[in-house]
Image (cartoon, rainbow, N blue to C red; front, side, top):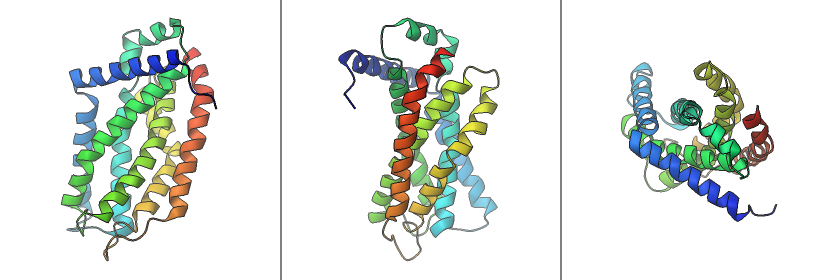
Length: 232
């Protein structure tokens, strides 16, 4: 695959800077995602009726919390462009349409990382035993970064599709959650040894490979169909 031309790279950079400036000015997406994640962890803390969780249960709680919080970010990803005419302006610009895909996916990925900076320590403090330090922390970072790529790509694709409809708040979870099911399973399975009561075990290479393959397949799929989504 040939590298993108300079005009596409400049378009991606300009769009990404716009997303960052918009979020820094309004502070709508990241605080909402972080607050939702904390609320969800509190609900898990009381509903499970346990002082701490470990292993597969801990991995499932963290994965589900992050996924549901990510849905909020996906819902808001294209709202400003849709309401302020950003789509029309971009379609008239002489740049590759996939520049918006790359910029939006990078922005959503950044939102997810910011979310995890808040949610993962809160999860470790409220629910996890033993504490998330050392090898367990680095393993968690590796797995979550792989998951973030898949969520960012699929979320951008679903967000672009849902923004064209009136019921976008309903369409996003209905489409995104089934598509992200492999990410949920792969992330939970990969993190289960990390959260074991006896200490962090080795990361399962098979599930890391599945997450990586998912990211590659859906990245190529999004690249192929995003242009048609914007046109429609």
